Amino acid sequence: MTEDEKPQLPFTLEEGLKMFLHGVRHSMELGMALEEITPQGLVVRLPYSDKIIGNPDTGVIHGGAITSLMDQACGLAVAQAMAPDFDITPTIDLRIDYMRPAEPGKDVFAYVESYRKTRSVVFTRGIAYQDNRDEPIAHCVANYMRMGLSKVPWTPTKTVGERQ
Image 1 (tube, rainbow, N blue to C red):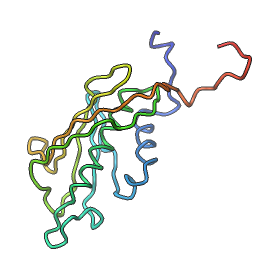
Image 2: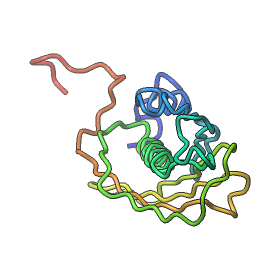
Image 3: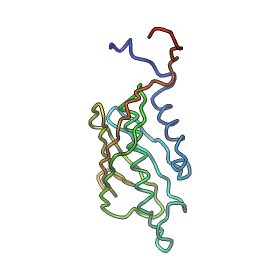
Image 4: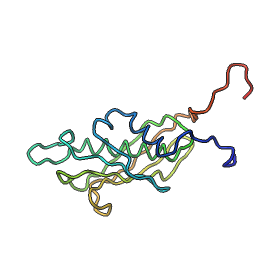
């Protein structure tokens, strides 16, 4: 299939990724936002708030909030790698290595990329950081199963009896 024959999105990649992010309730409850998209990957921001504090005495962010950020961001990287196609891609495996606690009062960012795509699995990796990507809070690798739907939901479907 040539570039001209590929289905075109009725919206930009960024708009599609933001729709995907906004379609996940916990991401919106935590205030996650898509900050940057590059051909290599993307950045998602988790703003510091009372909702993500794990220790009220110190203000340290709960590890579960970092896990949610990394899973959601890697899911967006999968959607980026699949575009313009669409597929349901549940998380098969998510491994996170926590390197140090996040500093209280600061937003957390996730830089993630999809580095391999097969017929059945998409592989991603990323880091969580605050001020500098070279000083990560956590590192993750995650794998997502391709369910085989490979649909393009924004194109018209054929009716019964119509030739494909």
